[in-house]
Image (cartoon, rainbow, N blue to C red):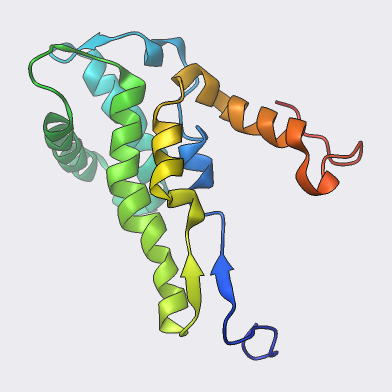
Length: 171
């Protein structure tokens, strides 16, 4: 864009990074996610394994049992920092969402914006505006599964008349 002079000096780049996350695109669509689990039982290991397999599977050769066990310990330690230790029961979706928010989204996805800084380009992340994030953090998880609420609103508002018969999505 810079090389082809398609940007003005006061232009601001905005991308959709993290939009899929906050609107529920990362909520595991399983009934067990919405039933409280006892932190002390084996279901926590299953939950952590799902998280690890989703995000660390792409490591290829590095995704071996030794590394997986190390990551498992680190993730479990992270969960201990997240949860309210006054209760033994927790909702799996809440644990997974917090892990995703505090680690992958905040540390990895948001930091990808640094490429704009490197190229002296202005940028913003409106999908991480505090009020927007707070709204989505209070949306019931079942409305977030498969991004149900998000897609319904997009479809019903149809801003810019983009959802025509040629571009309908199923939700």
